[in-house]
Length: 200
Image (tube, rainbow, N blue to C red):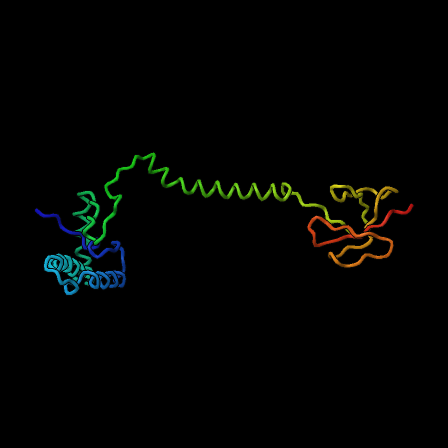
């Protein structure tokens, strides 16, 4: 006894598809498999057979009463046997990997591998960003009135004593400093502070 075709598979929709989804799928298949599109007799015959299947499925699935009856019959019949994969000719295209068997471990790796790779890339970006910004610690802001020590590595906040310099102004690079003070460009290269020696 020939195996009964599944109308939902024939149309290419899920069993819970709306009437509009079924209508749209039917239109697309009719445009694609209409026999009048073929001039070659063999292909035309194949398209006629495919179009007959499509139209039969549409006739059943587009009518609410017929669809309900079909769903009841289908539920009983399809519960008794495992679902078979659609053949490559059923949808007009083939899947090169359709008959490739994959072990459970390989299948798991293929599903989880991309997620782990993406997670690793994100963690690497976070680590590199943290290292590039000095471990995530933000440098204390130098304010007017603070005392600093100037060395080869930049500025260091210190207590106000005779060896320290007092910040007398803060601004952007290019602005002049008050009299008797010296400009020092901060590490971000767009800000400058003006310092003058601490007078006891």
